[in-house]
Length: 122
Image 1 (cartoon, one colour):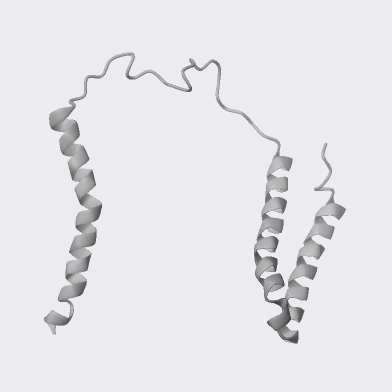
Image 2 (image 1 turned 135 degrees about the vertical axis):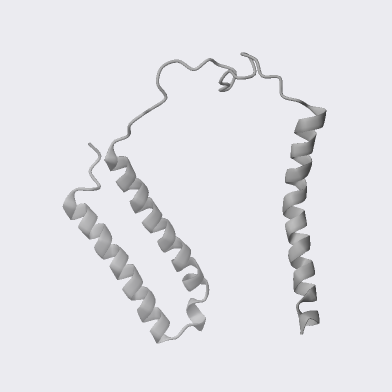
């Protein structure tokens, strides 16, 4: 019974070895070959060669997030409509009705966003 699981265990140990070997080699390299010598220059923040000035915290209006969500909705719509359009001639009536319901739901969402004033840029 145990011989049935031997190939699985060998593959598991090989996968574990492939994952842990680079980590172990990197740790050994850092300890023996290139010991850490921290100083002010090495610990300085590097951003494209320029010293950073001021606070990096920038606040965005929440309207931008709504535009991003609407973009994602239409992006997902395109992902679902493209295979449907490619296989349109080979599909039956049920698939066409399902896609029609999908497009109508997305159109309803767009109409709701438009009615709520989400799509106004101001």
